[in-house]
Amino acid sequence: MNSDFYNSLDKNDNLLDRLLLFTKGRKRAKGLPQVGHYGILESNDEVVDLGTSIDVLPLARRPKAIDMSNTVVVTVNYDFESDEFKRIVAQSLERKSHCMYGVSFLVYEMRSGRFLEFYCGTKSTRREAKNIYPFLPLTSADIRARRLEGVEPHGPMPVTFKVKLVTRGKFSLHVPKVAKCSTPFEPMPAPELIDAEIATFIGVL
Image (cartoon, rainbow, N blue to C red; front, side):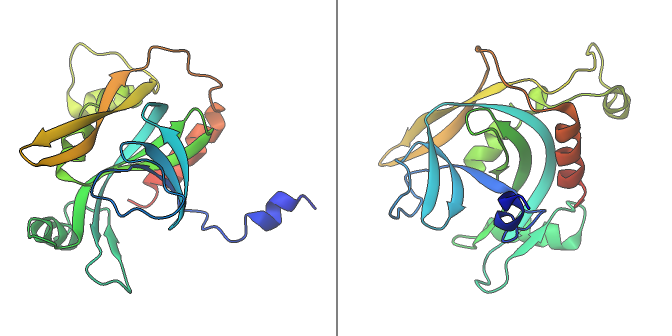
């Protein structure tokens, strides 16, 4: 039997690896990339360093709130209309609350050839999240539901994630910046594989 089967047994089938921007405030550990670099988190001390500019294909989005105040049990909620989601949002406004909320994106990263989660759960990343929306797939049903005008249906469009250093007084922070991808995005993942990943990603809603 193919060894890939055995190697996959220690992974949660519904748990995507995370694409992160490593900021000045993030705790450093052996093996982590430089500050201001994107990376794929493999474990607490192992990250694939992708550098300061990456090309991704945004495929889907979902609301996500996280309460990490209990270090034993982390609470994750995807229903923005629920009382639990609203509680986490309110608590996130408190200093050192260990709570976050925002938009979780399913993306395909070209260099690694992997489907990943990119979570815009901080104030700075939530601001940039809206600039990712136009690159997501748009169906005729989406257009009708959102009552959009002057737009046509389209598939996912490649985007480049860059990094900007924001300085306010003595405080500085690296934040993501989105730009239209100017280079060919290839190879593209198979359409059936994209459909399967999207179905799994939004299936938690």
